[in-house]
Length: 189
Image (cartoon, rainbow, N blue to C red):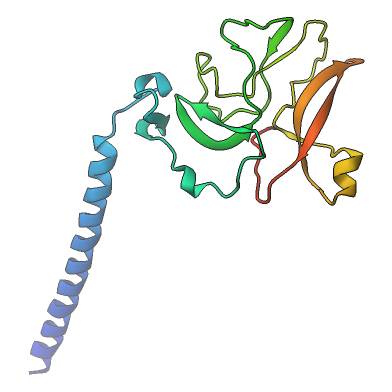
């Protein structure tokens, strides 16, 4: 009689484990199925422009901007990757880096980009700006990046600022700044 009880306990235990394994496998099958339904890609060019970006070698829907943890500074815009708005913000792009067309200056890509996944054809992926033609700064353009606050903004209580507009003076960038929104994470190095 004792043997029967032990066997029943083991059988009951095995059934419980088996049920849990099936549940986990069922969830994995759902996750795997949705992952496998996504088109494979090498970069954003393999995904639908304005609807998807390439992440982990599979196309996925554009980011949901309601999940952004901060608002863009006034008059700034969301950078785009493959036509999809990203949480990253910057002053509006003022020239096309692909054609390098820029009235009265040089089109220069900023260090502030939506992500490392930007393609050269993605003209709104980085905070590309038209800067005076005599620019000879070796450092990357810091537009959209964390930058030292102006005296006026510091006195107004701003402790973290972003470069808004820059000119090259004496081989170094000199930028006007805006106060960084709370929780703002610039993607600049």
